[in-house]
Amino acid sequence: MSRLTVLHFPDPRLRKKARPVAAVDAQVRQFARDMLETMYAENGIGLAATQVDVQQRVVVMDLSAERNEPLTLVNPEIMEKSGTEEMEEGCLSVPGFTELVQRAEKISYRYLNLDGEEIEAEADGLRAVCIQHEIDHLDGKLFIDYLSPIKRRRVRKKIEKQNKIRAL
Ligand code: NI
Image (cartoon, rainbow, N blue to C red; front, side, top):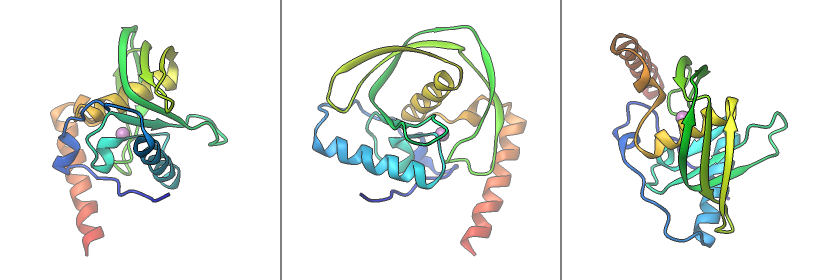
């Protein structure tokens, strides 16, 4: 296993669109293991391939308190959305920053698991928010895109300052 490098906003590579995975093979399974290792090491609850500069539609998540329920979604798609909910979100690509974001409260979704089987499921609460957040990443979208332009500019300045400090 190997840890991958997580891109940080405003890296333009976070804006790339990921392509569907053609076949869930050994390479995809290894990539998912590496993504999970990276997500756990960085204390995240979700990670999308776009964040590690791979343009494939793969997402990993673990919403359990014990950090022992890894889940990989290949080619995830939201089929239906309903309701609205506001939740405080953060992102491994936007370190040190959280903000309230409004999203659908309930979703039905489908994906391929690591055996290549198609799974259909429903989610609400944190799971629904996380899936929407991660699929956004695959489309080159970040949670701060939902903020007002003024707030977004403030985030950008703050993060650019952090990046400069890190580069010294
Ligand atoms: Ni994120």
